[in-house]
Image 1: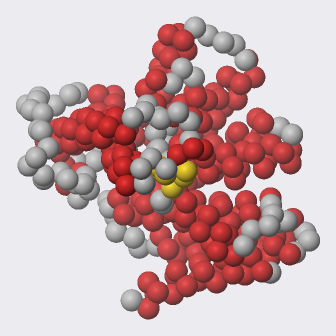
Image 2 (image 1 turned 90 degrees about the vertical axis):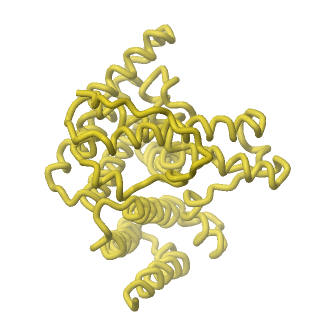
Image 3 (image 1 turned 180 degrees about the vertical axis):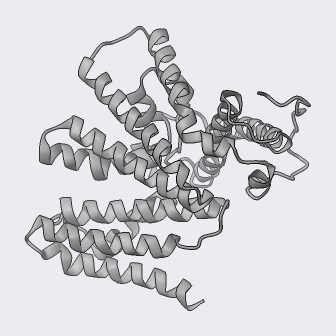
Length: 328
């Protein structure tokens, strides 16, 4: 119990130290070291001995990384930014509850659409989840695609939360949506930058891509650095959840290859017809996807039974019939 209290207190002390002391250090390199090393140590301590196979472990690890990236951006790249202490502490946790004024968001659908979208995704998500529980693990494309669809439809939680926030605040506030229909992406840069996991991409863009681009005047270097950091994050997540060192190389390779492909896409600057762009984008994702999703495709029913989605046993949710046959 004492360690559970000591870890958040240590994070808070690091916030205070960064805000009042480290940000005033004139040397960029010294600020980087003094900020980065405690973040790495605290992230390791926070994620050490987390329960295996639990989604709570994924959330904890991801939050530690996102908080660390925000702190480094504020202290190393923006040390002169006028930021009060409370804002400095709360800003890293924006990814947990990303409330924004509706007026600042792009054009939105009617509130009822958020609930309809959330319910449709919920039904599909639980259908695939029950299917995966029934089937034995297989490392093949069919199961990998099923897992990917399950992940994409898990944004039903975000859609429903957005609907309630907009409803309660009379549409004055909303939540930053996690995804924006990634299946409609017509390029890899659109997929990673504007449609898939928009919370993470926003943090990476503001804290890594933009500052590195400004310092180096090289968007390619900034893009590859962003994908490398993202790859390291997912490697750490997989090690925490699966405790399998065999996932390190393929997981990192997935993000590295997608980073290279995005750089090539940017350098070529060829505007393809929308259908062709969509086809090539998703072909590339499908080809590289087993590198990232393969470790989870090999997990059996026990893994999924330990990570039941919210409302999984609710009787009021329509249940689509689960096929008796397993793909593969």
